[in-house]
Image (cartoon, rainbow, N blue to C red; front, side):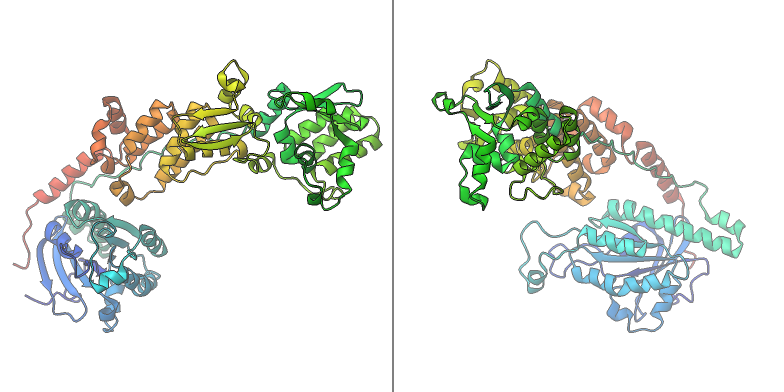
Amino acid sequence: MFPLSIERSSPRSVRIVWLGDDRDRPCEDHAREDLVPFYLGRRAAGLQTENRHPVFTIYQARVLGDIQIVCHECLGWNIFNGDQCSQYVVGEADIIILKYSVSEKISFLDIKDNFAPLVKRKSLHRFIPVIVAAVGAAHNNGPSCTCPQCTSDRGICVTTSEGIQLAKDLAATFLELHAVNDFYVGMYFGGMLEYFIRQAFKDKSAVKGERKNRNKCCLPVKPPELEQPEKLPVLKDEPSQYESDFQGLLVRCQCVDVIFCGSDMDEVSAAHRIVLCSISPVFRFLFNKKDTGDFGDPDLPVAIYDLFSLCTEDDNTAPSSPVRVIVKDHLFSSCLSDILHFIYSGACQWGLLEQCLRKTMKDPAGVVHVLQRVRWIVREENPSDLSAGSPTLSHSLGHFFNTPVLADIIFYVQGFTVPAHRAVLIARCEVMAAMFSGNYMEAKSFQIPVYGVSKDTFLIFLEYLYTDSCCPASILQAISLLVCSEMYQVPRLQHMCESYIITQLQNMSSRELSTTSFSVVPLLRKAQFHHSECLSTWLLYFIATNYLIFSQKKEFQDLTPEERAFIEAHRWPSSVYLKKLAEYRLHVHSQKHRCAMM
């Protein structure tokens, strides 16, 4: 048998260079077979091996009928860098494969720091297809090995994102081979490599002008083309109704606990303490008897009482009755409705307020006077700063979330007390608005028990009502919050939970989807039960797009016949493609090949 060196190979043979070490740790109990011999042993004919080369292990075989390939495998840079002719072999390669073991960070760093820069330089002069193969699975589960090497390397397995980034830097194809078996290596990896082999062979035949011989070498049956998966449905953003919710609360005068009166004690407007105090420290002092030392200027409380005063007759009324506030400034009192709408919008639309004041009052001096009063109320610490903006209403109300300040209701959830404010709940949740305003027990109760919801989920739900934002900690928590939002009929929060769940599932790699204990089918059932049509439709498309992963799980059998029919109609890869692929491979392997050297 002659040496299988690159000089002796046929000019039309496809030259493949395999760089990197994909072997498991030497201490693994069940050592798996290496990538190169496994692939060649199952997909090639007439395999011959030579181990006499100082750098490479050289293989020669035939694939795809009678396409000759010559493979040079080098396991490490230390061996490669010691021979001057080794770079010539890489430069003449038609295909380069960089392989590493997922559980061996050292093998990955050898590829990234040494072989990758060399491949990038060689690819500058001509196009060379490059495959980055991540072999094996990270050993994060099960009993840990106690040998010194594994103990020192524990927790530093190569992540999927590191492999993807390496492939991006090289403009290469990234493949995850969770195991060295017929599926991952024979079908998945083999299909991609043989595509490049076929393309390289066609290019060589075209350059040599041997169209007749090329037609004899190529198979008459063309391989099937894999179509792109269907695009998953996109959820439309639902706009916030936060500002309009509180404007509606002001207009409807629901659950008011403040009544503004003029100097003649005639009622002018009604409002809510929690909203006024969240925007204005003046009202916080007025209703909470704030200490004068907090103002920095002891004269400011005097100025507050020059504008407002509490009706002394309210001292004999019931604690739940609205407090009456007398407005001593006639101009301010005449524009109070516009001022309250400005406060309920977050005290930031100054231009709109000025337009409303000019329509109400014809005197420009009066407009300036009222604007100065309003700026003093919402920013009393610096009333001269007319250009400074104010925080949004959601930000201001967020400071009162889960605090007893001005609270007029207590929820009991799993043995814990959660203070809240009726005005916020009525403005933001129609179910609670009906519950607290109708002929229900909760309308007259101060302490209300909550059933069927955990404390953490209910707190996130309330935080959304106050701040118009939510941040679930996990998919499971988002599911619980989705159920809670459906129970209290808050559609935008339900939409936000759907978006969070979809984003988390889309960010999961194929390895995570195949190994995670999280089940998608039970999530589909919950989405359907709680009328989350967008999420349930998206999940069906998601299962169909990842058909090869989910069809192997037991939960797949729990799908209804209608759901299975939908998934089969939209699955990727399609059943038609897999059938054509099987026919093509059957045709390839039905050819009888004999080694020309024998």
